[in-house]
Length: 467
Image 1 (cartoon, rainbow, N blue to C red):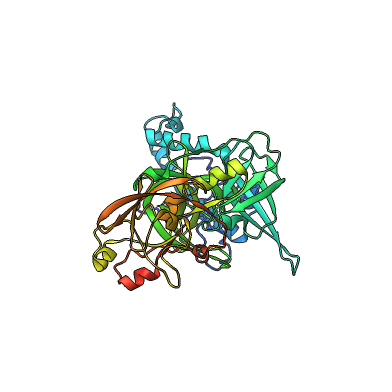
Image 2 (cartoon, rainbow, N blue to C red; image 1 turned 120 degrees about the vertical axis):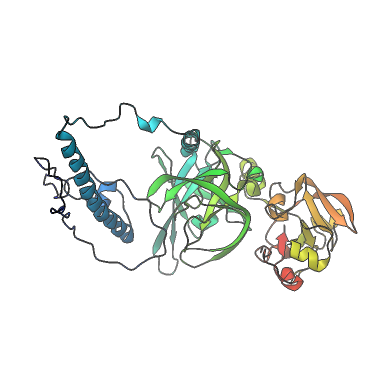
């Protein structure tokens, strides 16, 4: 096989350069034509192919890749080739100098350095290894009824039961009618149906029919997640690289975002999200965000397009009630409380002279009552002006909204709701109802109150739906 000039090793050691002798410059490699810049996050690059005849990245990876990804890899290969030439030349110079006094021996490792790692590295690797069998790639195909043109998307999912239930993002399966699931061992399932989607969150459930016995992920507790905590994200990066693992930390909790699909067809308003600096690339949507115990604490859902290291995941606790319903009855059932509220911030507490700085103030919205007539909250005695401080044993705060806490339960469950009324705390028993899509309290997307200091009027406009 013909070798490139950069990879050829000289038959005799090259002389060390002197003050009057300049080191030869490496031969320039052809530079591929420029392509328009994109805002898509850079892909994770595969290893540089063995020295010799240059390979195309698509041949080296044995996968189908977008054109712009191929260009990126070619540019890396060119840069790597130049670096390799310079590095080889420098090392050879060192060997030549050593040969003048002692025989060359080299410094070859006697132990496997890959096995020598910190405790944290071991935990990251162990966590990824534990959950990987539960992470699947999803291909979703839709067909335009008018043009009959088929469109295919790709995402990631998490196996949540032995018999084939999978949770993913709603935007991964939106509009699709055919689904294909590929497990980590390469097994492909094409007998897959959509169970349903959460009407108020970016979550959907699939069911693999005749799945046999799959490996479900261990569901953790996102309520105890902490800023600065180490986490690992796993997903089908760029729709090409299955079970790509990235690690980082939790950068923030309780984040509100307005997320838009890549084709700009739909906007989602999401609240209470986990922010992480773990790389979440296109195709990772629906994959797990896990702690170092290998437990799922979030579902990767969004990334800031024009920035690096800013991704978001839906806290797993916010779908636990719905998940239990799917596993028990095979359908999506969302509970709701039936109040309209605004989350209390220090600014709102000052403007309203409220006795507390956290919680949820039950207040009317635009053309919406504070409490739904004949709804669960009204039946339990909750009134306009009440401040909801707890749902069950969990405090209502920025990282735990009323909606996210309510969604941990199932329709029909009785839950204690603590409210502050006229300076006195009261506890009421509420029987949660099932949201069917017809309630006026579900006509709009929930919107989180801005954390900036703003007026009481703007706070009212940013009130959230307390389903």
